[in-house]
Length: 130
Image (cartoon, rainbow, N blue to C red):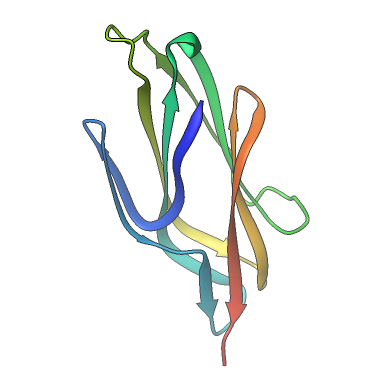
């Protein structure tokens, strides 16, 4: 399995296997804390080989600098069918978030797990502005 895309954005959508991503970012500025970010999306595109056909579990977590989960993890199953042409199979996973609350400035992370194994992490930096 290869991760082709794993990014935080203002908006993402999967439309018939076509992935749309608008406005990727890795930091948020706020005048005061706690702060609430109105909306954002995680866009993920995974590519599987024929030998990886079958069912796979995924989990997406948002954690703070201490490893504490900020939200309920997003979990699901994906089924990869064997390709009939010997090519690799791609799958998109989009998670949309609304009203994410951050108690203090610092580093947060979105973490991606496939079949129970950590595969990648995305940092999100929260900064206090004057």
